Image (cartoon, rainbow, N blue to C red; front, side, top):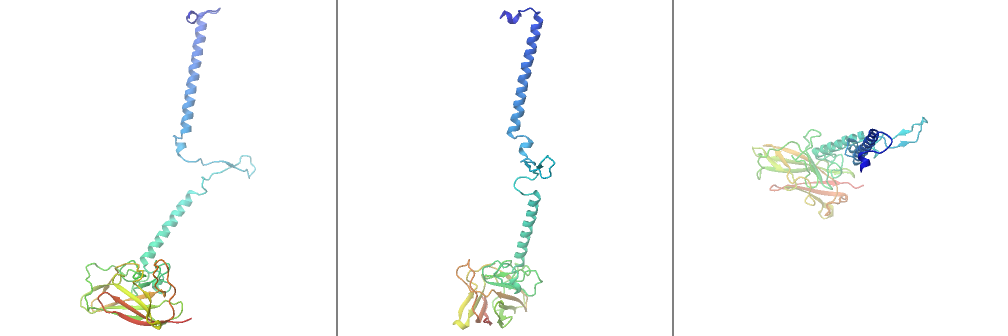
Length: 299
């Protein structure tokens, strides 16, 4: 222990103390350097910094040097093969599709209501049935019925909101009449019927063309009055579709039938109705039945 406090050697003791101080300083510096290196390395490996949380690096790996300049070509796209701009385009496309769907819903009947297409196909949203259209409504306003849904397996557009305060047409005040737009329909042409509601009272009232109150049947008279289509089978659309009927006046609706049979399986579209003479019967609860005939021509 004495040699530690009193250095022994040919040189003065102050030189030995200086050597010891330098050695201690070097050891302290080395320890500090090791501590600093461990802290810096730990921070980078845990990913707690901004770089760790920022996602994958922009440049990932070099590609083959196609231009021959010796520096290689860097991959600058993010993993996944999609550009951020593509996501914006997809969002715009989705918004456009949603807008198109909403417009189809507001229009009510789609092409089928105009008689140019199949009301049970795309646009009407139903497996089979009818479309009810207001011929007096402006183009694109949706048609008739005061509802955005279908009526009895078809669709009923909205020709204007019917006030809830408008009273229901009283018994005996509403008269229904039914007539074909054409007496016969060749193959491929959808039958269209004109339904007229006449209010004989001195006050405005409302009638209901929803499937809860309004029914329509198509019976083939050539086949022993066999019912081919019935609105009570798999009814779709709005249960209530109010229609305003002015006092001492009337309103019309055009009914387009999809020319198909009713089927018990509501998820299956019925087969095409056979040719022949048909009896159509329309009824609103509490009022007399309206009838008319038309013919589906043979090929």
